Image 1 (cartoon, rainbow, N blue to C red):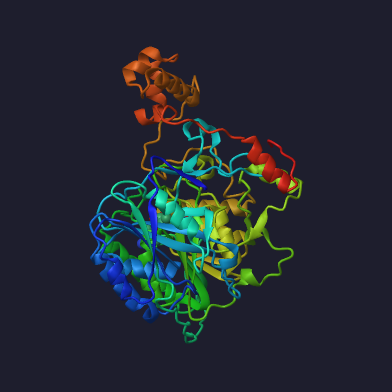
Image 2 (image 1 turned 90 degrees about the horizontal axis):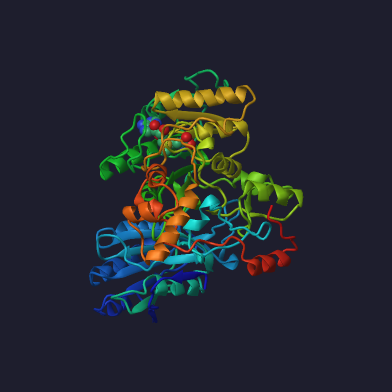
Length: 595
Ligand SMILES: C[S@@+](CC[C@H](N)C(=O)[O-])C[C@H]1O[C@@H](n2cnc3c(N)ncnc32)[C@H](O)[C@@H]1O
């Protein structure tokens, strides 16, 4: 098993075949609170709403009758998950959207499109408030080339657990085939919910309840030329950066004129933007989103793609609106490799892709496989992303690449300040490189209506696409212009910088930059020693009297007492389990190297 759940009393498993929707009513008669898993039909993701609509209503009725403490999980395709979540929102609370990797035999290859490589596991509760579950960890995996963990925990190994990292909302360590094999998921749920008052995981097999309908062809759309009204230095003649409100600006762009529309909007999560209130009332936020999404749909050329990035919960709303005006294409799950911070850490974003009418075969899926450009190749899952190891692998010509699917796990969010400019949330350029490589050809025109610090337009320029970037804040707009000047001077706008950006990605205050007399790690390990001596976490006065180091260090180097005690609360991980490394390494014909 690839996970370990603390203090879990494993649930029994009861399987209920549901051949007709009415059978749901008899299963719902159990009055003891249970954990349910509804296994819906698998098939093409763009199923017809009519085919599943009555099933969704029956599921809603079933959930309405369930006792207060019940947990309901539902395994289905991402677009069906979005539609079902909207139906169930009045009776259940959506707690988690988990992207579960598919087994190779279940990956749906689509002609000229991205292969579908993940299913959606929605986890709802009947109760309000935080989801109750066991503390579950996923075992570390080790790169067969360098032997280090596939995720880079940097100098923080002493604050992590020896077994593994807290589970996230992307499950790649187990894989499922929704048509016939979901054992790994059921197995995990039995442990994750192995606590009071639950005894049983009830698995409702609804695969034969209804069939997914074929897709309807869409009508073709006319194309027109794009006039250019905005012109600023140092942007090339064929592209534009606009400092204005996106809704106003989009109105001036003709119908059917853009080859790829992209949006990385404010997520309404109270980020501190220069000119935008990121804490709108949620209906106002979604109304606003619907308006610019409609504009993007209007200006998109026929057969081309609109991609919108957001957290999975908000993407459900975007899905509903976009499905009413465009054709569903792909649901890309981008696992942005966060550090473990919560019991089940949110680690992925949804990149929702819709086309205008029938999608054209994707440019990136038409290229010959040999030689495939790097932006169109994913990293094989067993390898790490450390720059030093990647360089070694290239030198030794290690086969570490795999075909791209709709599950992206190898692009890190920007984690180092040295790579960030003064904007609270910038995307990694690699994400845009891959999107352009898949969805566009050189020379085509791409539009980002939330240009921010300019990532998408800068990458477009580097990849010889034309671009329009719209940004409300003059500060960010000018920042983006400066980065275009860097390109003109032959500099890398994504290179390392010396200055620490003022704006921050998280709400935790930043401490002033300082030189440490003793490393933070040494201080935390000393607190671990004291905790072992006392048999519990120490208080401040105890650290003051028992530590080898002055208490002022603890007070000035850390944000909180929790951070001071971080290493005392866990075992610390060991980096190199020799047996695991040697087995994988031998199997792949690699020489072990700490590199
Ligand atoms: C999530 S950030 C985009 C970051 C960008 N992808 C990058 O990598 O730098 C969203 C941006 O939208 C901008 N914004 C908010 N409301 C806007 C509006 N009505 N029109 C145009 N831009 C807006 C914000 O100022 C912010 O820079």
